[in-house]
Length: 303
Image 1 (cartoon, one colour):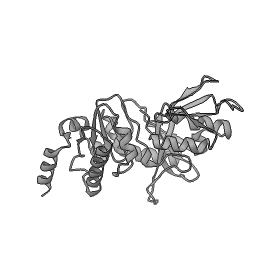
Image 2: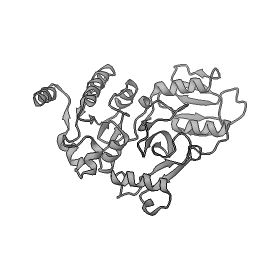
Image 3: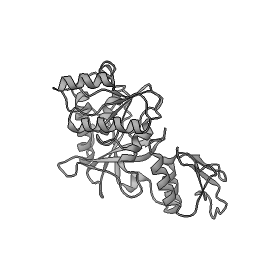
Image 4: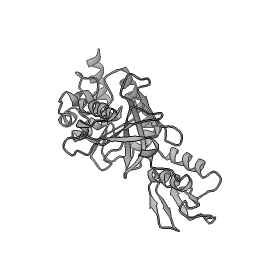
């Protein structure tokens, strides 16, 4: 499943290729000049407008949408890698003895919130050493080893707390945090730290970058084959998000919806994770179908 909405894919491609493209006969693909050859006036490259999958019939190269911007950047700008461009330094669970003060600050923040997967030791974060994101923890959204989005979280009292990427990057309302698209369930929570906390404990999870799910995100979620479980926080914003989610899923003809709030004793999934809750068992035992029975029970418990 592509984690970026078809609307963004279409808008991005038509803007990037300007007037130098044509649509396929059924409007499902964009036919463009190959980015791997020069002066390709015959347009040997096609890009699917729903999935973002592309193929160059001249060079044999093919890939997904998240790989396309990096290929185009290498061809037209000959720039350094994204990590170098954003001045990022990696932060892993093994950096507890680092002498780099920024890495140490980021490591402490992550360790205190149990955001390293100590079983697999494959959790990777970054900290920016200069520029717009200086001193911020970078949470990467990766697919096939390519960044398709990131969030920059302050490690101090700086405002705003979160910064999102600019320019050619998707809007936060157009992306989902990466998840296992073949699992039998998916908890949709608010932020990446919540999703990461659940994933560390074996729960398939994603996030919608806040509690206000967008039409684009519901469009991406409606094709998921398992249970889609709303996991928004126990507050008024979370309640509004649930109502909006339910409305949009009807608009998008999305089938059954389920719900599982974080435990009432904590503010979110990351706090529950940090305090030692067994989140896999909790989700299994507290997930309910979002239907009239749930709404009546919920109404009675809030009176």
